[in-house]
Length: 371
Image (cartoon, rainbow, N blue to C red; front, top):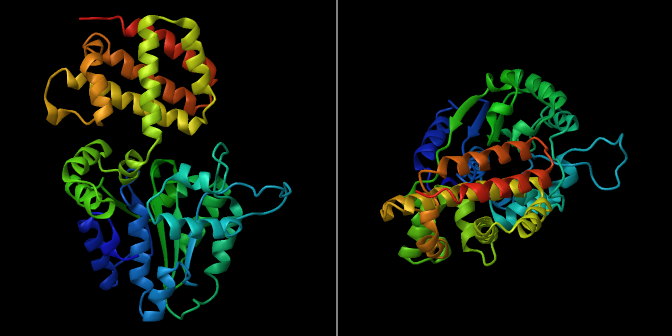
């Protein structure tokens, strides 16, 4: 992958390339920013730029087979492994490389966990991973040049791993680079954050998103523009909207059902709806609630009849024509804060059945607050 393969992000790509070409690139950097902005694509492109000194090197890089490019990522204990077995990224490297070759550099944690069939389990970067990297960087590079580690989601390192990684970053071997790719850098140890140079990656510009949707996905300009507006700079969200039976379509259906049942005050059906939501994994529950927040905002803004202010699919807009008056100044803040509170509580392992049923009862009250 080269810098030209990245969707948008020209300014960041040019900045990193300049630093690399002039030997000013820090040995440890952290790419931060929202989901779907292309941080991993930038990381791989930068690593390839540093390692691609020969035609043979580029051939290996294009197949993710360069012996001096290493990846670290969140994992779980392998199935059937004893509790005292040390495990690291090598246990899942085949699946990781297969994902990169098949799906490219645009993915998120749920996609990765789905690929290794552990969607509902808690992943982490264990202490054995720091031992693995220390061993890798203690020997000379295979090709006689630089050695690079891309650490995806370093905030998932457990405390013991983070402390060992700190020592490696503080005393880096010669010609070594650590490229961290983070979504929530605030969760990382302050001592590590203070020793890496942070680069903030912005959401993909709408014009670049539209161009990529037209050229890479074959969308018309109208469809590409609508999709890009909804995606808000997140390529993963844009691609999701294009998939038949996608997750966002499911969330929309669940939202419509909630609002209709809440308006009709069908308590028994609302209880069934809550149980259906509770059966989803916690990460999916949170993504659904975030989608509910977006839809609620859109239906409120639809009342102003300013198309430039709304970001909806055709199906969502069709529902808005009759439903939007039910989202107004008397209930918009209460609804939004309700969704936010449930997101927080679900994230803190609260009982999902209780949370979702409580949400339905409160929603039945909010939706009847008319102007």
